[in-house]
Image (cartoon, rainbow, N blue to C red; front, side, top):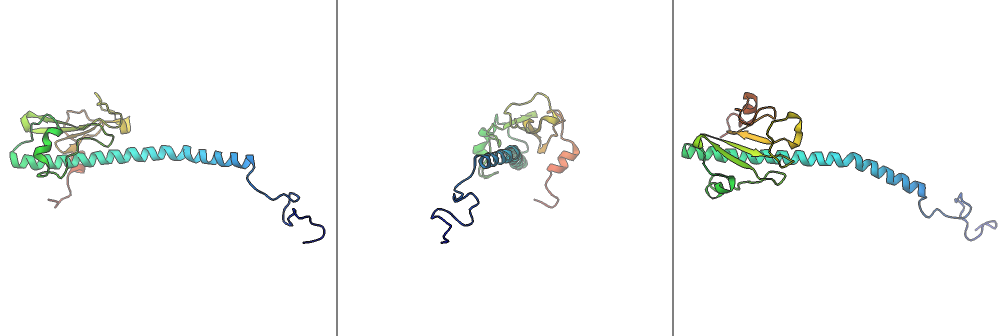
Length: 179
């Protein structure tokens, strides 16, 4: 130790002998503001990703149900005339599908409606809001209903009773050569 230093002084300490032992209030406020800003940016993106995942999961479940319905129709020359998906479970599991989903990605019940005594069917999910819409609104996003008619999804701008557009039917069709 040099003769000019006291026992509590450090040679590299610019504050005159007091070592830096923590953060100042200003530094803490800046860190909290940065964390808040990151949260404001990240949380909406996370919620968007969760909704996108739920919608994709619901579409996959509806395609699985449609495949099982088509297999049933091939065996029985028509779609089942059950009142709901839960009523189909004993008939479909495990013969036509490993498990029969009855809820969408948001936890709302999927709706099965048969038309013309088994000639066709409609599957519906109410979407994120859990309420079935009376009109189709293309700007509704994840609030919009998911509607599948005879194995093809309807676009949000199509009325629920309409036949699927050729583009939607082609997009929902299995790849050529698939069994």
